[in-house]
Image (cartoon, rainbow, N blue to C red; front, side):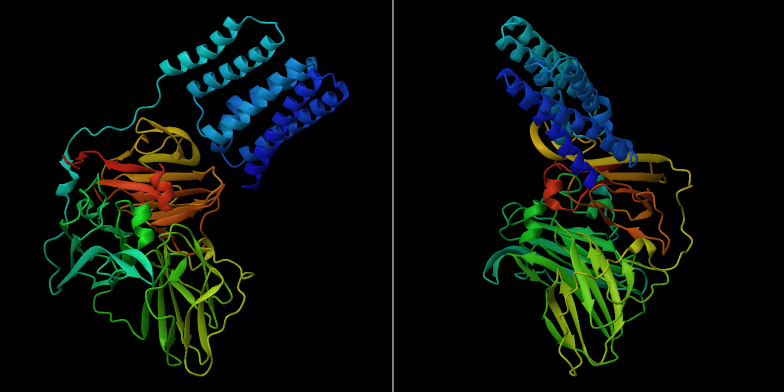
Length: 581
């Protein structure tokens, strides 16, 4: 994203140079004004060059520049070339400033309304400057400024999706019994405040993380959720697990939040093995951070875990890393070890396994094909994501380091766990790991629906309220139009990150198959994910089969970003939200 930062720098430089040139020209310092005018012109040409470089990464990175910012910049440059007196220099500075602010504050896409207001404000600012020199009447100043606003108001924006009725999502509930020969796994979770390590946490059953939920494939999982005293309310969302929509735990969409004194029972069949987790989805940016989360692990039917099978949910609680268990273990040499690593925070963690070679055997609950040996390679785990790593316990010690600090140590008794510096280790790239294998669809498939989500930060009207939000295609939740699909559709989703922050993207109810990242297709194992990190400047293309009818959240799993607008719905035709939800 270096080009995006450079673009803002040269745009700001052009604006500052030309406005400074106008001020010095008005003060009679013509030589300084000439130098500043030249500096602004060079910066303007620099912005044009940077825009051309950005255009190679996709139209969404340059739309507002090509349609508005560069034309304004060109108008300013022409004005400066014709005359280097104060008013033309100020006009050029205002034009450059407008383009800079449009990129920074409005982002993608810029429509007619924003364009007209921007041009009107540049014109009005220039006329105000000229008015101070006594050259134009004040009525003209006011009329130009108001014209853009009036026209912008009557230009309609895109309409959001509206619920047209159908089967209520609350009717899409889970199974009522287990598969033949399997059992019911019952759990009771009570959300309540408790002091954990001197910190007032929000807990399930008084502990952080909450009790682990385990089952075998074919079992029925039944969880009774009670809320003792969490005033904001609680729900349970099964992150990465494709439950029926009525069990998904999204307040305002699939159920009402469980308020203090309330109860809700979740039931779903454990149909797929793997490593998952659960967390509240009501006020989740605060609730998960304060402790309302836990692990969900489903093992294959008839296959008991061998050796040490350890679930490690990595969480930051009150500034400290919490793993949910002892930070040191004794493990006999030769023992098969499986670490189920879960990132329950809102940002990525860099994990390093020192003292042993290992394999990444599963990612986001799906086994990888042909996982090869890794050693001295760090794992960047997205927010909400999971890696299962496997190794045989060596005669010495093993350390798991989180963001460079030792968090979990294992020893066979012969040596202490090592604590090397791992900052220079290369980073694991899942797109080139493992062996290729057939997938049910790919980049050349015929897609029934195509959606593009451009992630940015901008001013937006979200639910009728203006705010500086995290946006999708220039809009913030709940004003983002839904992705509407039919059951059975093959859906292509392109996610482009224009911003300067990483956005871990998470679609409820579905796994996605990664088709490419920045135009590069995976060369290793087919990569099925439910949460993928879209870093600044990256473009991901993923696909999924619409095979789980319902209304689903599709959002950034940096939960603070989602809370500030970066989410939308995936809506199946014929499915409606329920009254009272």
